[in-house]
Length: 122
Length: 107
Image 1: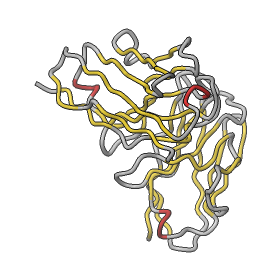
Image 2: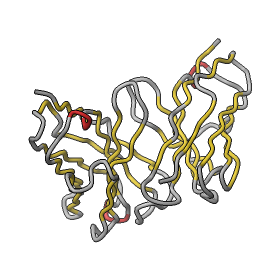
Image 3: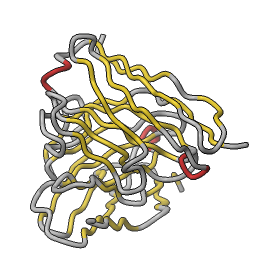
Image 4: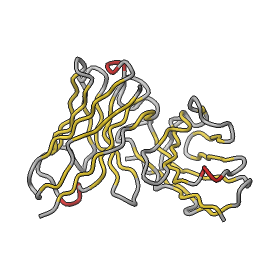
């Protein structure tokens, strides 16, 4: 079955860290770029970060640059997002999404996980 | 960053109506425009990529058009299962950016 499954979300205090993971199955993982997109419940979609098929290029939104790190392990078909120095405005549902090609902005995002909720609060 | 502006929102229409959503980019994105459908409590689904190409398995009542800075998304005959929020997204340059969404309701 073709799917993406996120994990690692939860409640965390401001300033602390959290690591999200995404397990991919059912497709050739290392052929495609992967992304993280977040959504405050009831609000719109915000792209967070992307990584090309090989992992050699990583890109970030300005809102997370310097605090978040995206990585992938093609041998394990997994994608991670290390989130440091978390802030209240990072509170959102985080989706893992698959690109339609290997580059960071080639085409749309054609597969999404169910999301994992991150709540940053004291 | 490229800003994407969608209209209208919300959009209220009757079953069987033809509905159109527009999306405008702040700079030329050629045809690098994608459309998603998000039903309540679900992840987004890619419906259309490259402005007009229908994703596999998507019903033919959905269509897209446009290039440059002006794009449109049309449902030719609105069905009850089409109740959702629709987002445009540009993939011309980083950061990837989404429109604010158009919630489609049944009148």
